[in-house]
Image 1: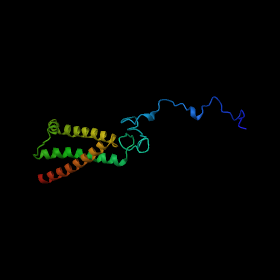
Image 2 (image 1 turned 180 degrees about the vertical axis):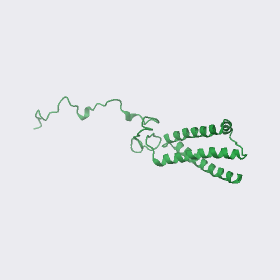
Image 3 (image 1 turned 60 degrees about the vertical axis):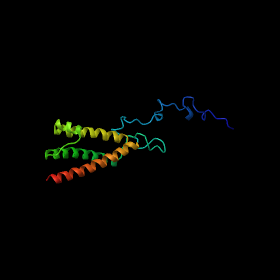
Length: 160
């Protein structure tokens, strides 16, 4: 008694689950891009698509902890540039030839350019947060600027 009545027979107008027709190409075949419309406005991906995808994948949702760390890092670079100008005003000398060239263009130019360059670099690191070299660069850079801040503090105290 396996015969189906007309009411139980599937309609030919409806696709069966095995005949699924996607609306377009399968977007899951491509990795999440480094930059997409979701990167800065309403991200969707915190981790890799598949179980175990944690390394070398792009995401478009960033943790508040990472964003706070990058903001502090950026603030350290700005403090460094302002401290450099104060130190130079007290008779110090800039040893970095690129920084010296920017300072020669003007103090505001130096602070703005260093801020822009630092911001672009930090944005790049943020986009690559799941890549080991980016995490290493963030740790090394943050430590460097933290120690540089302490060094500037010592210089300012000695200059009093």
